[in-house]
Amino acid sequence: MKTGSRPAAFHRLRIGLKKFRYVVENFLPQQHQQWASGLKRVQDALGEIHDLDVLSETVIRIGVTSAAESQDRWRERIAVERGARVEQYRREMEGKTSLWRVWRQGLPRGAEARSAAFKKIRSWASFLDPDVHHSRLVARLALQLYDGLARIGMLGEDHGHQREVLQAAAVVHEVGRSERKKGHHKTSRQLVQNLERPFPWSRQELAVVAFVARYHRGSLPSRTQREFRSLPQQLRPLAQRLAGILRLANAFDADHEGKIQRIKVSKPRDFLVIHADRFDGHGDLAEGIAGARHMLELSLRLPIAVRPMPKSKK
Image 1 (cartoon, rainbow, N blue to C red):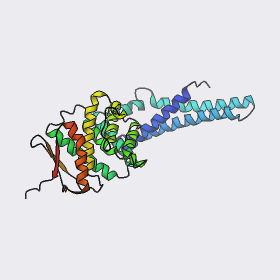
Image 2 (tube, rainbow, N blue to C red):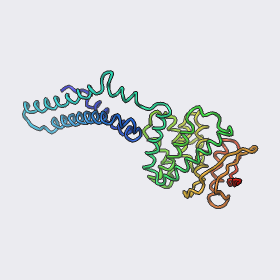
Image 3 (cartoon, one colour):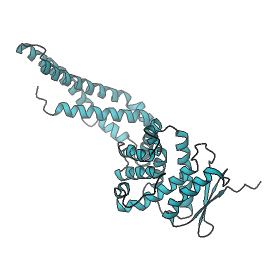
Image 4 (spheres, helix red, strand yellow):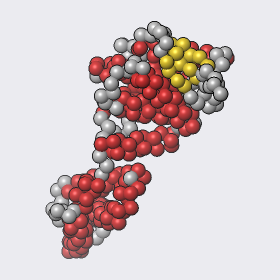
């Protein structure tokens, strides 16, 4: 049986299809409902091809029988069974009506594809984050802060996916706690960097997510630090600004008690004011918020004041 590199190629294909089926099943429910039977048939065929390849290697390695004629019969039988599965795969996957074409045409595109990718990141983080409610609250606060800054013209136009990158960084910023408490922000960066890049996100976007998650607390980024130098120069100001937003948003729930749920941004004069509901300006939480402002102040080149939310007029 002349297989050459084909067993390894089929094995890689099997692994790839397994991951594809997992993504469709968990994040594309409508497509999975239509594609489930085809995915199973192809995955089963590739699985059996792999099993037969392993069996063929095992027969040769351990010498099932010393008789050459018997060994030939083993190899011939395996080749026949394998060939039948390969032919089954080709019937499913070649031609104008192939499943590859059906799946490719049915995959989400644009905003829908990015939304599915974000759901995958959020699902991954939920398995590692010991306090998902905190991270999701921080994500909401970070987006409120981002939207407020954008509304008053402090962020310029979002030509890429800055808001989405910030949201992803907020969702994953605590995943490092799954391995250690001390220095977990550094571990979060490593875990995000090692994450398989979700389509259609770029490597640069994922690198910014890792950077922003890393600097949600701890020392400020320095030009001499590896994390800073690893980013393309044109992305560094953006990454620092998003990290400043996340750092401040995280400070509003530093005690993980969910006290502050809503913030608003205004710019009355030459400084920013952030109004936070249920903020009284005293205690450890207020002290932490005061310290967390600095990174965003440096990025925006404006002082920031945090005040209680004005009472609504009845």
